[in-house]
Length: 332
Image: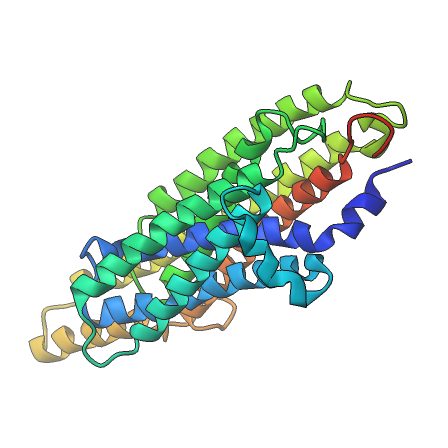
């Protein structure tokens, strides 16, 4: 007996818990420059409109989870249990986040948006995001499922979102052409990754001896160390790619600046104009990379691959989570 059948039965929830929390955290990170007043004018408009990227990722996860309801006509009954049922509270927080974010995204296309209103909406959205991620983390902390009621289970999901979220945000910032700190986002993802790895090692030790009258965790997930190692490999590669892409982008800009400083002094007008044009082209992604893609597009693609690798690693461990479904008494 293994837990593969249980996990495949809940594959839509695996997708939901992989995509939605990471997409929500990415949205929060991308909203900070506008909410804090760092980004204004065209830069703020680009950031506001590019928040559709993490928003769509979160929505894909939520739509996937909706299929778990069986009959879509029963969906509205979920909201009757908000505050009483952890699963209803999770859905309620998700809908609040997506509704506010959708309204904000539509308002970002206004010809003269009010900055105060935008910042207030973003603050409300970010509060909804925090509530949503926490609600998802505790929604599956069920006392009758002995493998899910462990104290580190909610922490593992929160840390998942802090691994995937910053890497998705890096892609969004690159598309919006907003200069973001590589150390801040990659460092946050790396710190969460290390903590997440430790949590999975401890959970593995806690889970191994658990059993009921029908099965043991060892029987349900016989290859837990291999799954955890896959998470480590995929997530580490994703973070490394995202870091390398940011480093390459900064290096290209530095090289462009270096060419401007080292240009000969003759023909001052031509020398002054040419490097400026080169710098503008580099900023707009016209400078070719080694593979022939425009420079900025190349780094967007690399960062996107990095984010996908990290999400794949998270998906593996969310799949394992559902494999470990082991109830009290005569049941799995």
